[in-house]
Length: 396
Image (cartoon, rainbow, N blue to C red; front, side, top):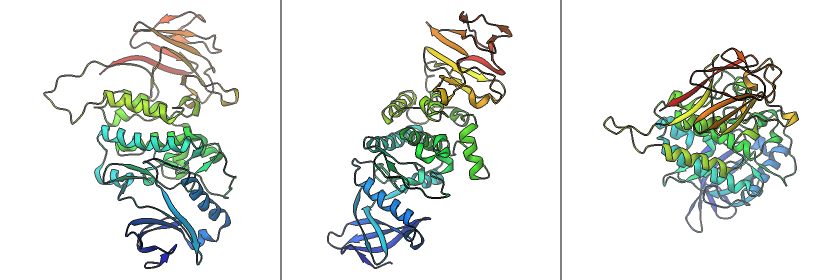
């Protein structure tokens, strides 16, 4: 294929990479001398009607997008059994390569990169488009530090006709949202933001949130396992990083950031709390940060208490019940009520109130009277069903 001219003007001069469906070439525009990227279906995919339909849908979606953070298509066509899309060429490396080469990024760099991707997802969401495969390999960081979101091959919009590809998993296991793993058609912007939360975790820590021996092992962890702690891997970071990742990777979509704008606001909060440059031994101590939490005694998993009035319980999607602190992933025997207890903060003090739960709320072994507040003290143990958590107020 090298040396071939397509669309009457784009000469293929090198192969950039290949995947299961397509090959990416570098091409020179014979009229302007500019460099472009050409994505071409391989022969096997081109002979599959469903994959071919998905390829053309990618172009239809890409041409709807505008803004600096999404790759821009230039032309498309079919010549001598070659199906191709011509796109702007991006001089840079994908984020997977960046992390593999450099390791964890400085937190402020990770925040800036992730914010740019979120802005790209926002421009897609405004047109009803869901990417469905947000991962470091599909995010290019240019030499100027600008992010480009690429590969909309799995994307869909609310106006797209359904395309069913048999026995194909939609997404990438290390970054897939629980609802998307269950059914790719159920993915929405919140699913893309979940995947972006996984990318942010990797940029900051140098590793993915969940690992396993097989793809199934990884997906099961997205569905069931406790949300990992960034601060356990980067202890110098404010605890707000854990609070952010808990919300970004919540198992139930209604408990996550509901829009790219909310996600970006969370990133901006982290930016305000993150000191610039490496820590210095002689630097004055930062102001004390108080961040209350509940700690699951069996595993040490933390639930940050973000808000003055929080419901603790077990989510039930069929009844559209989504408590602020969802114990469903760790309550295998369903001993926690859907609305088990209420936690309230006033003037720096914290109170627990049983919500007439079937298995009563217990504070340090004593059953609470329903709907009567009891003040919490550092180290108090709360029992909700068969789940024991400790109340902590950490100073950092």
